[in-house]
Amino acid sequence: MDIDEVKAQAGPRAFDPSDDLPEEYRKAATRMIQFHANSEIMGAYLERPFIRQAPSIDRKLAFSAKVQDEIGHAQLLYRAAELLGVKTRDEMLDELAEGTGKFLNCFHYPMTEWAETPMIAFFVDGAAMRRQATLKRSSWEPYAHAMDKVCFEEGFHVKHGEDIMRELATGSKAEQRRLQEAFEEWWPRIIQFFGPTDDKSKHHDFSSQVGLKLMTNDQLRTAFLNSYIPKAEKYGLEIPDEPRITYDEETGRYEVVEEDLDWDEFFSIAKNEFEPGRGQIDTRAAAHDAVKWVRDALDGYETSTRSGAAPQAAD
Amino acid sequence: MRWEVFRQEEEGGYHTHCGDVHAPDAEMAKLFAQIQHGRRKPTHGIWVAPADEVYSVDADETVFGGSTDKSYRWATAYNVDASHAQEVADSEAEQREAEGRRGES
Image (tube, rainbow over all chains, first blue to last red; front, side, top):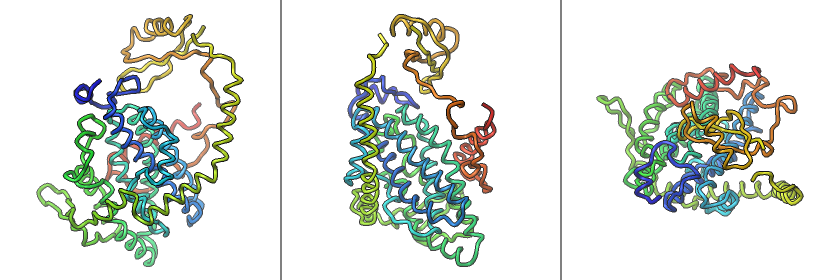
């Protein structure tokens, strides 16, 4: 297949590993899915400390289940990426450890306070879910399949995140104040979740033409704002003055003034040059390294049993 | 030898186990599978795999997730309104259905 044929045939779940796809498609899909997989891992590492810091046994169990889910999503996604034949799973994990693997802007910021947890568990996960629901119709079938399971599980994550927010928002004055402070700190980052505006997006046109992506960054961001601003207001959160957000009475839709956002910081994060993010990459790399002996033992076992196995019966 | 057959109904859908065939090799297995399992029902694709090469584990040998009450991992456990986002409501509906089947098998 050449690129023109791919564009002509592009549609929901149109291509699978049996198709002979051009390198340009396979590379674009790898970049997108690898980014997604890396983000699942980095997000899980950011939330992991809250298994210990959870204020109750219910929250502890839920965070533990959630972190487990996110690591599982990464496994599904690396498989979907690996099937494109561009990079192996090990190569992608190594790139993440070395700091060349890219991931979501929000997961480059430290999260230390309990009141911050709904910022990721409700807003960022909600934003991710909005995007992931559209990716069930991605043209790379293994990616779309992975989204079926991911979206099934994410409903719990988002509702759990909202439940924490509800608890804080209806709690003591101090809890309400801490929630508002966390919201003000995280709000611009959350809006930047969907990436640069369409005119600054490097990869959108191609990814959209070959059916990998279904909606533009701007469309997704606007859809997110329109669902989640009313939620924030419902819990009494005050939307910060900046970035400015306009409400169009006629269409009933919110729009953000993009120039109010810190795009220098965003693009330095995109290059893995933002300091807290670098620390988080290294922390995860060290944790990954600490259990290398487990992987080595499994690999050793696999090799020893394989060599002793009888020849395959097929054919 | 025996081959397990997995049928995919629509393009992009899951291959679901639908039965097996006897055949001397993979080529013949594909042919028989087409005739036996892809002839009457709408079919987009078929996989065949040597039955000996399919390994299984069942509920007698292990305890699978989803059978014990872990309500904290279901969207339905959290009393907040998900109607602001269709995709969250959809996920909750899928989970409600799966949770309803808990303990059936």
